[in-house]
Image (cartoon, rainbow, N blue to C red; front, side, top):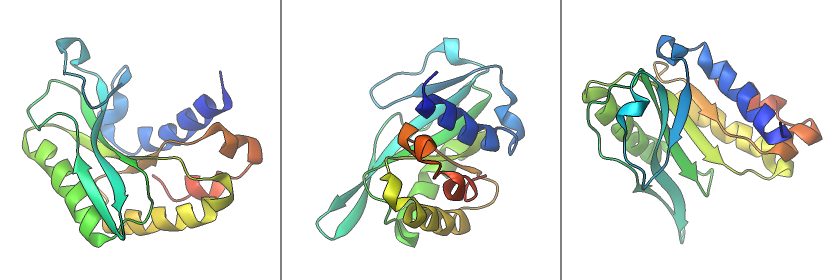
Amino acid sequence: MTARTVFIIAVLSCAHYAHACLQAPASYWLWAGQGYSSRLDGQTIYLHQGLLRRDGNNLKLIKQGLSPFKTSSACLIIVFRAHSDAWDEAIVQKMLFIVEQWQGSGNQVGGVQIDYDAATAKLPQYAERLRVLRRLLPRRYPLSVTGLGDWVLSGAPTEVQQTVD
């Protein structure tokens, strides 16, 4: 098992206990371009729904992945891939709109996950950005992140772990 895998499991386990719907027997990631399969019924699905990208001086949320529909999964975690951690309230509101569309379609949404490859040296700044995001997200949506193996090897992820649920 790689250091990255260990770190991702550790971070995700924090969110695992934060929401009852995360008690499904297995979890799967469903990335953009993949369809939903009945084999995912009853499972926790990490569902990629957008990309946060800079366009000049502006940060944009580009919607990606499936459109909201009622699934038979036990729980959905809405995932946003980020190329920048400079999100603001307007971006978070757009993210929340997507999350609530899935919730409004009759699904149990168990949280939001950010997939961002922060440089190890910039983890304190990333942790601060995550604190802002945590304040802007309703508490009913636990926040989790993916992480890099380098974070574990450097001993640096503690501050990031303290900012997620």
